[in-house]
Image 1 (cartoon, rainbow over the protein chains, first blue to last red):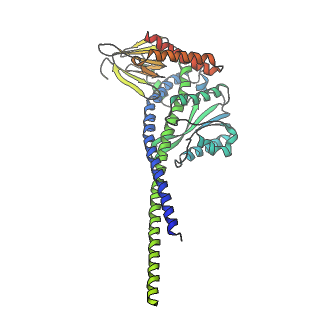
Image 2 (cartoon, rainbow over the protein chains, first blue to last red; image 1 turned 45 degrees about the vertical axis):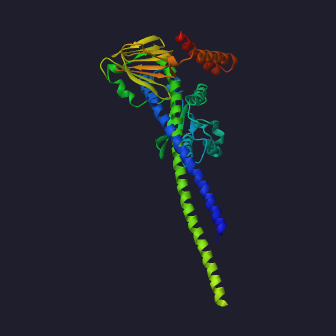
Image 3 (cartoon, each protein chain N blue to C red; image 1 turned 180 degrees about the horizontal axis):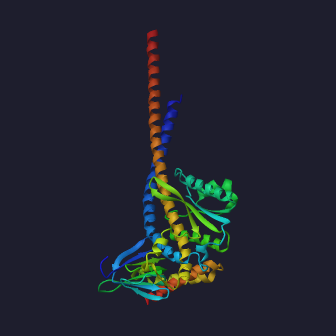
Length: 295
Length: 134
């Protein structure tokens, strides 16, 4: 039976924890709003780029002159998996979900005799992958989106991917991240970055007739030459933005739960504290009365 | 869509910067400036660093500097995907000159091939800004 003093200490420590979690929840909510706005604001660019790529790539896919970023290196032996997670924890199952999916992907690939290399964006991904797949981790990029995700940061990561591809270090690149659905839910997504996947709809657009026939300036190859690297950056940027929004959403939900649990715990402990206090008073009264009767 | 107008959209990676109708848009294409009027033939072009001029009604056209990107033109619409976009009036000559100097210094300093290419690109953008400022 814990003493009254112990209970008082427990209650005050839980109360302190509750203050922290509720503050973290508020911070996460504010950051979530900003991250969500940023993610939504970035959508038009990515969408239009996809449309352009669709109409361009549709006419070039399969031809010999197609750039490597579109056509691939003609092989699929080595895979680069970019695992985008957060740098910090305390956000429920957010990091765990992404890492679990990444691990499944790695196992699938290895089961078919592919070589896998890993590029971690965010410290938590590295921490959780290091034990099983430590030797495959090529590099870890930390501190992305500490305040807000900048396009330059995504561009630097994409540049890294492009350089590795240019040097023939991998054949296929996929990115694993959490797509933002709502403040309380996200969906772990695996997306191929290199070679650029063509949108499914371009077949329909191309057969629409003369309106879909574009003039290209300077020419298709030259535009693709510019567009494809740009597309990798944009896709990475979008993934990072979605990830940031999901992270804050997950943290908000986790901290909300924690605050509620702390409240429950305080209520339970307070009840126990009061019972113990009353039991002691009763005991003292009995002692006094029985003492008086004995006289 | 109002008759005889082009829907113009200017998008940067961060956000949709501008979405409005115009009588004519002049875009600095890689192979030379081109004007977009309604019912223009479908066109996809790369964009060099330069100024987009938006003619709508009477008066001075709105001028927006873009640091390269892509343009997609359909009969109804003109979409520009810009790497970076600033209204020309907000460019500051001293600031741009400093950018240019720094980019040139970076290009001269570094041995790394990629970093030099990036610095040279920055220098080219700054030069284009200066040229637009006249």
